Image (cartoon, rainbow, N blue to C red; front, side, top):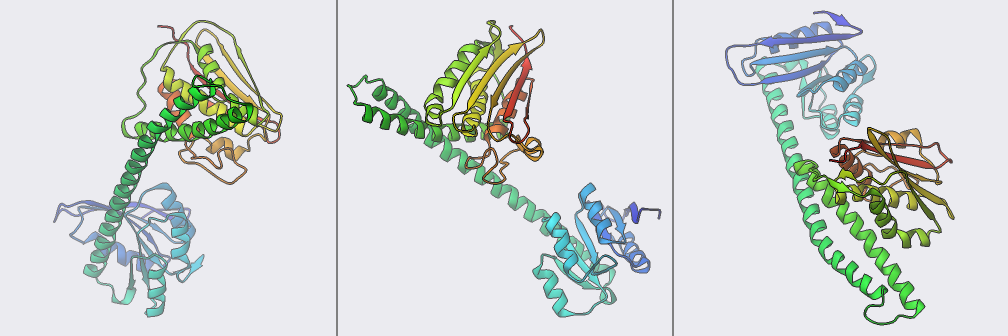
Length: 384
């Protein structure tokens, strides 16, 4: 077996006695004799068709292996050169919470065994008492438990998302109705209002619009996760679309003393899914207003060349750190109260990315801390 920087390259062991399944084992063991013994046990087992085994002599090397590949089970020695006792279990699970760990040690100490199990190990075996059958049985049970837990987590996650979608979709309908009623009241179609009444209705309308905006993002997210982002591209007047978005958030901008300006460099309609694309622009403008400085300015510029349409939303807020720029478009990404979608659902910018990519484009962001931020949508310029 050849070693590279303290790591043994993966070895494939094949057994033709029984054809069942493949298992990947990571052995973290600094004793060559013990490692050889365990490899021999795995070589002559008759439960798995193929056993892929990687061997690391130190904990840091084992963690490096885990970062590069997916292992079904980890056989972990508790007496390693760079880690001792059950701390090794904690260090692995801190980085790889779903790892299935079987502790192997020369220590016949019940207290250590219980501590390892409490910290997340699935089983504990002493080397002196390990037989081939016992080791294989422990591996098999650990693998099956891990797979069962993963399946349970997947089912729970799907059930949770189904519930969120159902609630968001059901709540969205009455909010749409409420927005229409607010429009009639604010336009004084049902009778005149005094200034105080109109101001109060506008605030309530804006609050309802914020909730509806969040619900629509959640519904959009669910639909994308279930079936992918499907668009129906039709000739779309982007200048009109941007004006509609600005009007939707005009009260929020006024409440935050933020001036919104728009510039449009062309008049030709563009092939796009208007409702989806409007949702992307709306998310960006809402974000820009929310994180602008007091008495700030937000600009929306739309231009094109022969190949692409570029829509850029800029603000003069706190800007973006490198960490934020790398993570903003991730699903449910949120950091702390200073980040750009704190106090939100953490899906708005992710939804933007899905919509833009469904149009064959890309979305990017930039802006140094203290210098404001910009978000750019770039989609192919198509008219038919």
